[in-house]
Length: 499
Image (cartoon, rainbow, N blue to C red; front, top):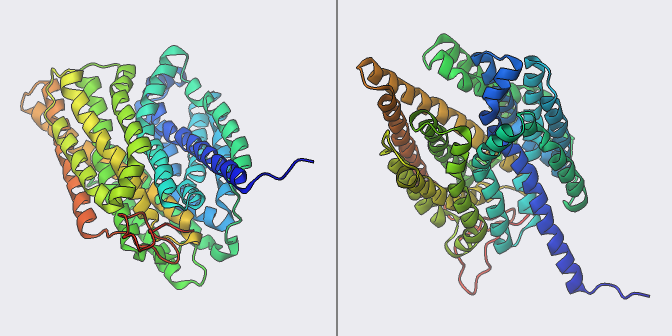
């Protein structure tokens, strides 16, 4: 008869299972994040095959973003109520089936609807992952390392998507940017069901607020839709102002309702935390600024330097490697040694410096001299920035609010990025049009417009820096949760985010 495993052997097995479960969760998140950018490279091929107009083609991207950005907050809270693993698995199934529908789409309408459904599945899959990670890794050092892995996936997934989209589209066909999700989705679902700990949630009755659900979902979706249309409509148009007002009224109605009912869908207590609210503000400003590099930087390479899509993806690859090293190797040690807030401040300074360096790129720029230095600088800042922001965003969340806090920070990334792009792209386009009207050459006018975007983007990062300095505070341990902070004195317990 075999002897029972020793406690140490059982602990080692449990530890290995937790780390494998983390990688499974992050594989699912990476698949979702990739899909937000992988399609961009394939749009010309999709347009040729299905006969999209330029306006209609935008909906291949927008349909996904509206559903994804509009449902993240709700999906995160549903995870708290119904169980985060359950919502994650349902989202994976929805996303994988929708990916098959996208790959096989015979018409424009089918593809757009399938992309919307993909966005629904993506929101359900990714919203509560950070909450699950925090629950799986309560010990400070392990939690810092786990959040570093998640931070890399969240921050570098977009640039990986550009490269993957270029390779798949040019080497096979655009259908494969969706078909590649099938084996990944199935494998992730099977492994997650076996490895990720199940949690029952606090029960749907604790937040069964149908009117509130309608208000928050419709308000966020309408807001994201309006932002995405700004480039076509303009900021001062009646459509933009009118729909923005409706979205604000819906969201305000949701907040009023949550404050008055006994079992709110989204408890407002979470937003009273300076760290939770401040971290989300920092994230929104930082992402809005950083997206100028990925969006305007990619346009600079294509329209000014004549790079093809695959070359653009390869140009961002070194920065992806830098983010990987920092997120996976350095972030944990830095978090444990300096604390989240202390680590965040210099990281924001580095991002701002990188954007300003991008604002000096010439029309005859070269990769090594003009593109590599700023992209690597921003990557250094991002690799050091995402883990502490995510740590602070989760630091004051109660166990029953972990999914909500996770969904909130993901929503901030999406909405902050969308607003930032809309504003900065409009400013850049306006600057370019003005210069061309004065007779400036097209390439020089485009480049000057992009420079304005980089400078304004760096200004947004400065705002994030000021919020980090004056709003955020070292995350203390508490009965419900505490953040990772600078090492405590030898006779004091080390702060830990408990669940």
